[in-house]
Length: 95
Image (tube, rainbow, N blue to C red; front, side, top):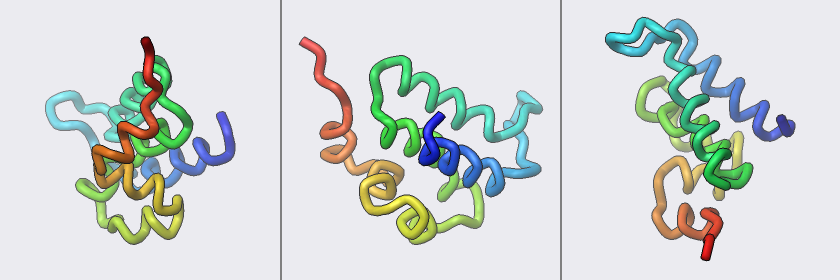
């Protein structure tokens, strides 16, 4: 795991601390981790994996988009926000 991925893992883990998934009774962070693994499995780069780890942080915690921007920069923040053009630019094209 790269340093950037490790930071992107610890940031939401702290933000989601104590939260559990409805109906599953598992730690909330298990969902973003699973999404990040899927992104990696299907060829997503480090930026996409980081955004996958962070994707619910703004919606489901007290963290704001500005916090993601300050901690991870504009490219990751845009992916977290869901800018389709930026997501498409990061996704590998297979022919």
